Length: 210
Image (cartoon, rainbow, N blue to C red):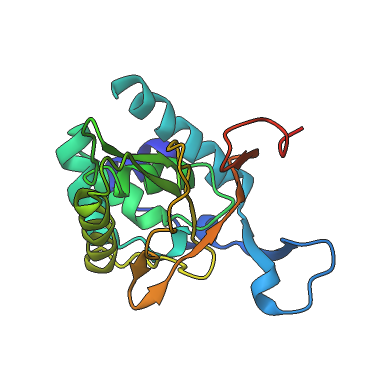
């Protein structure tokens, strides 16, 4: 059955049927946004996904992925002939292929210069910029380009959850920089922020993390 599914580039509807389980994001959730929908898929589907994932790995917010764009990305990056199969599986949270497919979907946007770069880990993205002599044009332009790219690719940036952490190495005190704006929303500047399990602060010491 697996070989036939791979050959035809199709997945039986029953294998794709999943049970959506709301998993709380906070200890005491009070609204719908406090839950994360995780899909419990069938064991057959998970087994097929793992079989597909192994050769792919050797060669090289999830619900908004566009199958048409994903198929194009897959052929361009991997040269994989059965991209129709991957597009038909979908990529809801909780599936085996979801992190890989999302990473592949966003692979064509990257940025890396001596003063700015984009740090990505699946759907957690961080823009890192070094501002010298008050010239932040590249940093702000880079953020705008990233926001525009997300809009073109049907990916939404949650500006309310996005934060900016400013580390000032200058000895003299200066007024804080103007806030960064994403899609008309000013981003809050914070003293500390938790990124990928590590608590970072504007002093770059380990006090908050400890």
